[in-house]
Image (cartoon, rainbow, N blue to C red; front, side):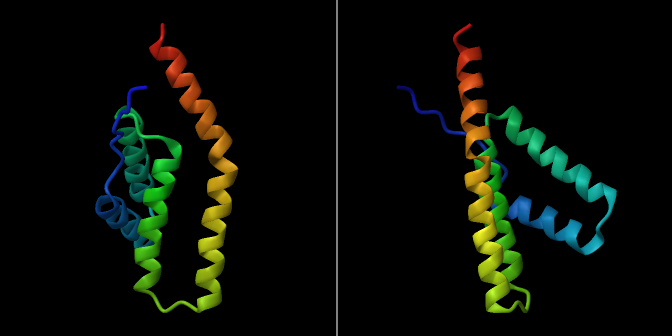
Length: 103
């Protein structure tokens, strides 16, 4: 079995883009998010890898914002829940990519 290193957006780049969007809430921020996702997809990054980068970037933002501990716990738990909910999609996508490589 061959191991491939997937290139996902770095946490720093993703964090900067996410923070910019949260502060400005405009269409250009969403376009940047799309570009980050597209770049990740083109480089072989998986759905769960993008989710992991988002989780880390959001954690940095929450760590620098006055947030109640219960709110932080709920956000962290919701990320874990979303990760599990998206796992079947990631597995199907990976299987599809592997199938395409054999053709």
